[in-house]
Image (spheres, rainbow over the protein chains, first blue to last red):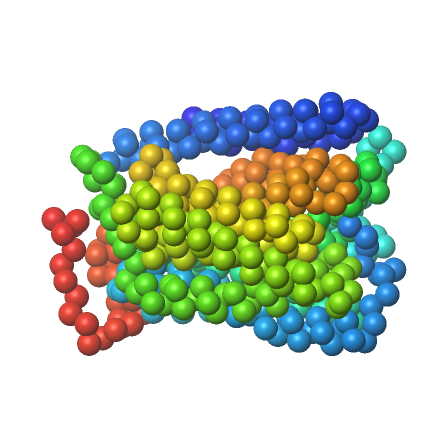
Length: 59
Length: 429
């Protein structure tokens, strides 16, 4: 689970980079970069939960 | 950000930047004191010696390999996408060869990056206090100093793709970060998160039943004195960074200094109020964290925002930091003795975003967000996977017996305070 979360995070980064390449308009750019950050945040949440699960198993 | 070479840099600016950079190591000393004070007394000597060791290893690694990656040269590793150049890494000389013949401004940039790499490696070292072994700290410092920090430093300060966002995509002035909130603090904070995840919590920190065990720092005077020392260093750091990376004239530096002070003081006031409201009395170590978080935020903002906005960004950092420290410990089971993930990681990322919100140029916000995205989305997973592989070769964590004895006795053979009586730790029953 933690690896899955960490693997999702670069997808958010590539979404942010793609946004500045694909969209010339500032509103679309900002929206898609924010979406990229949201994907990263989701990946981070999954990674955190994975570590919490691992920690509770090791207790 | 404008590339280094074409900008004029008069002798007075050179001399002033050099003097400021000679003050900047006080920030490193302050952070080292805070780390030692927030750890246990039986690991204090290992913490301070470890600080010197990781700094030494990182600086050497940066000198041998890192500067070649971070330097801006005519033959950088550039990929063209959509007819735009994306400069990913420098291809300078290894072992600092040809340093004497480089322009004075680039020599100052090298000194700035030497100090930066020293601070970067100190951040995860503080988070791994009381259980991270010295060899593991040295290995982490090698990776950060040789590859990871130089890459981010090149993107930000060496004319890399983040710095070129302004010229290539009309995103403000490109990713701006005069004091190193991104390449130094956010990167260090994210490295700290990876280290803490891999090393695990201190023994007895999260018992099977009940809340986490409080393990307060052993010397709050070190911590608070470290904050005062760090302020002096941070002033030098932010002012030198403003001259080097934001091309500020000496006459514009007073505002940067004022903003640094405002950010730190506002953050302290906010943390003081938050802890007073939450716990009935102000918490000294959390207030120290708040002060440092304000300074970290100022690293990104001090050179680019007006005074009132610097005050506001500090206030936000000061409110955010104690809440995050509590969240990480109580809700997420992350044992971070120095609070570095909140102080350097979260406050660094907030500072970068704030510089975009309150920055003067249109499009700056998106440039800053892309920078944040690259740190969080790319560097955190990369760091985690590298450290995870390293931990299979070098044990990050000391064994249970060593942790019970304390890192001083276990790794150094002597205590920091030999006249102290060592009490049995109840958590080992």
